[in-house]
Length: 236
View: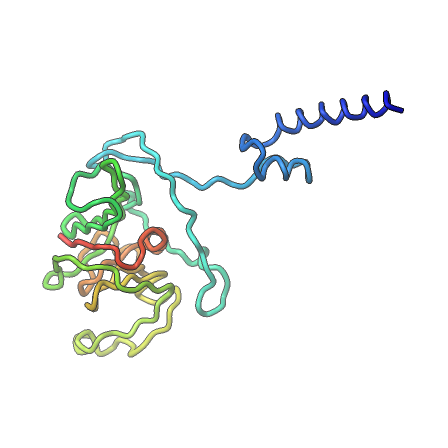
């Protein structure tokens, strides 16, 4: 009987070492346990990374881990917002990592209205760069603000001065894919200005707004997840 138990234990030991060899390289983490329970050692999916580019668009082999975009239900209850994200075509304004030696420090936002870029500063002389739309002539502004509030699929109530210019606008519009504020809004101080998404992604890279900073919806979701209330925003 003892001999039989010895053979059985040796077989289990061999099977265990084989399981470890086949499991996800996380050693004794979730991949190994999942392999023992189901035979599937793939383990949890890894978060994607963003390809890096040097200053002025020059290729540079840099990779920065990106948080997975947190897609939520639309306020109208019509399912996931992921299928409602409108993507722009112009590759110049695609989100990318660039070398950065401008003002500010890691964690802060710098907005270059002339170049139509928003920079989220990263450590080690890098920044995540997003394409943006900015104010029309007469509506461009500069200065420093902080993010005072954040909203997902925000409602939109045009201010009185905008309604005087555009009496055809609705007095109030609930959040959703057709709302001009898009998927997310970050409010700047006590002003009427916001960093927000858009239902017109083709306007990114243009002077189109009444002073707000507009972004593609997938980009404003990414920025929203990275920036807490209190983040400094410098518009230059």
